[in-house]
Amino acid sequence: MLNFLALIGRVVLGFLGHLGRLTIFAGAAISHCVRPPLYPRLIGRQMIDIGYYSLPVVGLTAIFSGMVLALQSYTGFARFSAESAVANVVVLSITRELGPVLAGLMVAGRIGASMAAEIGTMRVTEQIDALTTLSTNPFKYLVVPRLLAGLLMLPLLVLVADIIGVFGGYLVGVYKLGFNAGVYINSTVDFLQPLDVISGLVKASVFGFIIALMGCYNGYYSKGGAQGVGAATTNAVVSASILILTSNYILTELFFAS
Amino acid sequence: MSAMPKIHLKDVRKAFGDKQVLNGVDLDIAPAESVVIIGGSGTGKSVLIKCILGILTADSGTIEVDGTDVTHQPAAAREKVNKKFGMLFQGAALFDSLPVWENVAFGLMQGDHMPRKEAKARAIDTLSKVGLAPEVGDLSPSELSGGMQKRVGLARAIASNPEIVFFDEPTTGLDPIMADVINDLIVTCVRDRGITALSITHDMHSARKIGDRIAMIYEGRLIWVGNAKDVDRAGNPYVDQFVNGRAEGPIKMQLRR
Ligand SMILES: Nc1ncnc2c1ncn2[C@@H]1O[C@H](COP(=O)(O)OP(=O)(O)O)[C@@H](O)[C@H]1O
Ligand SMILES: [Mg+2]
Image 1 (tube, rainbow over the protein chains, first blue to last red):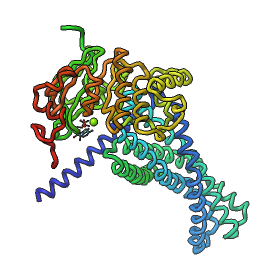
Image 2 (image 1 turned 60 degrees about the horizontal axis):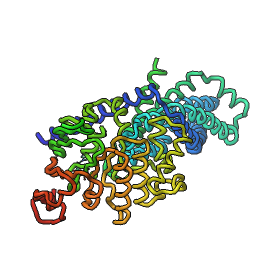
Image 3 (image 1 turned 180 degrees about the horizontal axis):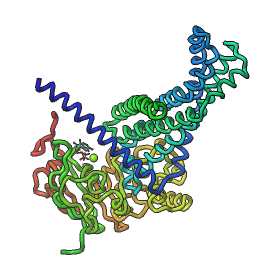
Image 4 (image 1 turned 90 degrees about the vertical axis):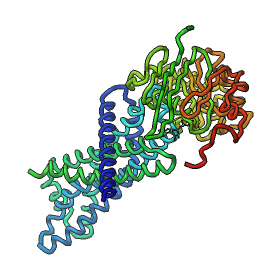
């Protein structure tokens, strides 16, 4: 019994320790974001990596999500003879939820993992220590460019995903379900509020920050050679995905609950 | 007492969990002096250097650089002190995302804000001092052999004219000839320029060659410090065993934990 309680205690303490360390890490990273010097070159490179090279995966995810949404909602609405709502459902689901969440999850797998692997390898091969000895702050040099790039690029990616996803719905709607093209476009645009898109972009920004933060944090504290780097990579993706889904719910509440 | 020591260590202690790695290290290093620390693997040699560099923070004790206490200095102030330092890491720790010349010029560009072009010229110049051709500058570190990586690491350590240089096992993992090349480079780059040096090694040949003084670390303390030429008649059974590389003696290797 005592052993069992001790085990619970250890797990809880370990979790709190992690949480505390993560909070301190995030605080330090944010404070470095607003103090010079920044490294525009490095920020640019990260923006290309996150934004440009993620386009294919995010685009593919978006187009098929839009297509399947149109198909499924049509089946559902046909039962209530409400087929005309398809376009509306597609555009709202994509801009509010699926665009940001799916892009976030895909980028977490792609970018979060590679950030953790790169920074983790730098940690275990002492390259991060070497930065310090060369009078370069590792937070400024490694963490800040990734955080800023995540924060800025995810909304752009999601905007593209929104457009592609809606287009996917349009393709299925017009060419498979037999909607009139003009009517489909009209019912897409008519009910769309600016907040629908903006809330999605704000979510995307938060997700981008989460992805970069978890990638950097797990890489920064990885230890013990290749195995440690592997574990850091897994943790970065899993924790970023969980945090994305959790914060998505909270953000939806904040935006639309009232 | 003569001039102020460049580095002054007093009762430095460092533990990881319940494992006491440094257990009261005292050492003074005079300006332009080269001190070599010898000792078995895992005895805390690298940890000691990292405490001086501020990569790790000592639990207690005092670390002074040029008379300034840096033991618990915050990171921002630390960056200023670190400008005096150069460090050659055990595994070279070159930045594999950058070409060789940018590695060497890193401190110049980031720390001293030198323009790229000028920094590149300086990097090529420093590379030639460690016997590497200018073409090597455009290679990636992963394309280099171990010996070349060590030389690039050495070039990076001395490129921004540091006052104090640390060498962590500069010859480990190299063939004897390359090891001696590195030793010679350390002697010419450091001793002849009046740089203060603290090196770590368990290669006795290297220790004799690059050190003015030798210190032996055992169980977290420096158990013997003396002139390099006296190391063979230290009269200390631990030092004798280490210098002669014998399995029998007072030092028991922990084969099991
Ligand atoms: N960051 C760290 N966290 C925990 N233990 C460490 C850390 N760095 C070093 N150690 C431990 O301290 C001891 C000394 O390490 P080190 O100084 O690297 O040895 P060496 O004398 O071979 O350079 C080792 O047992 C190592 O496991
Ligand atoms: Mg070591």
